[in-house]
Length: 446
Image (cartoon, rainbow, N blue to C red; front, side, top):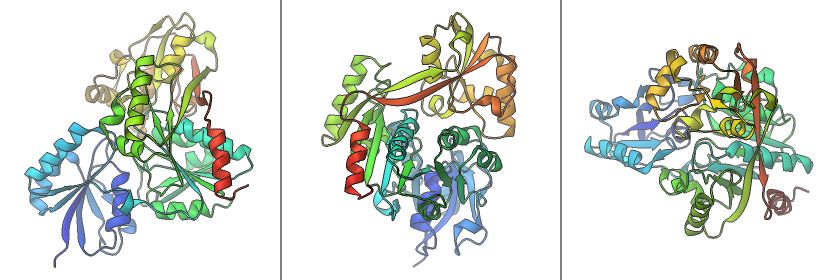
C-alpha cells in the first residue's frame, strides 16, 4: 500500500511535536507539507532534513495556512492534522469544514499518541487560554520545590522562530544563554523569569531529546516541570497536571481548543486573578470547573502586582506595554501593566495606535480589538526596531513595562520607564505548598 499523504496544520510548535512523535520515520505516512499560522514569517521555510528523519532527505516545506485548500488538492492530501492551540471551536471546525470540503480527513491527535514519558517525576502546567497565568504558576511551583531542597528543571512549550535545526535542544541557565541563542521577545518573556530566579529551563524542537537532556542536566534534576504554551495540553505524560483558568474571561474554558482538554484532564485547577475579577466571572468559572472536572482540586489565587517606581505613574499619562500573545491570540485588552498602572494612580492611558510603525501597525490591523495598549511584539530584528520606534514616537510621560522582561536590556527607550512584576499568591487552602508536600511524599523525593 502507498503511504497516506498528510499535511500538518500548525504554528511552529505542536505541529512539529506531532510529526516527531507520530509520523517521523513512519513509512505508512508521507508528510507533504506543514502549514503555518499565528507566527510571522515562518511560511516559506522548511522543517529541516536534520530533524525530519530518513524519509525526508530534503526536509518538509512550510506554507502559509491560507494555501491549505489548494495544497490538499495539488498534493493529493488524504489527512489534514490540526496541531495548534487557542482557537475558538467555531474557528477550528471552520478549518475542518474547509478540509473536508476539499476531500481530506480532519484529524486531532490526542495525548495518548503524542505524550512522552519521563524517567523523573513530572508536573505539567497548562491553561484554558493564553494569558491566564501559566508561567507565574510554574514559577510558584518551582519556587516551592526549590525551597524544599529539590532541583527542578523546567521545559517550555516550543517557540522555534529561528534556525529550526540549530534549535533542536536549547538550554538556558543565564541571561548570556538567552543572548547567545538570539531569542525573540516572546522567548525572552518565558525564559528570562526562570533563569533570573536560579533554575534551568530547556526548549527547542525535538521534545524527546529535550526531555532526556533535562533529566540528565549537569546541575542535577529531581523534578521536571512542563511550562505549557497557549492552552495546549502537555507534550509529556504528567504525574500531576495543573490547569489555570481566568475569571476575566468566564466561559472561555468551554469554547476554546484545546483549553477544555486541559481543564478536563487537570488534577489541580488554579482560579487566578481573583483579586481583580468580578464575582460573577469567578462564579461562572467555578461552576464550569465543577461541571467538567468535579474531582479536581481547586485553588483560589491572586495575581499580585508590584512596580519598580510607582511615582512614575501617579498622575501621569502613560503608555502601557503588555505581553504580546496575551493581547493577540489571547484576545485580552488589558494585562498586568494596565492593572498595575490603574492601581498606582495613572491619570491617563495613551493610545499607541497613532504612533505605530512597520510590523506593529500590521499587528493592530490583524488584531483590531487590542485597544489602548502596546503588544511587545519582537519576533525578529525588524519587529524589535518597530517596537522601539513606536514607543519612542508615543507622546507620554512614562512607559509601564508589563511584559515579563526588562525591555531596556534589548531596546533603547527615550523616556522614563517602570517595570511591573506579578506573581501567583494562593488564597486560603488548599495551597500549592500542601500539594507539593503530597507530591514529594508520593514520589519519595524527601
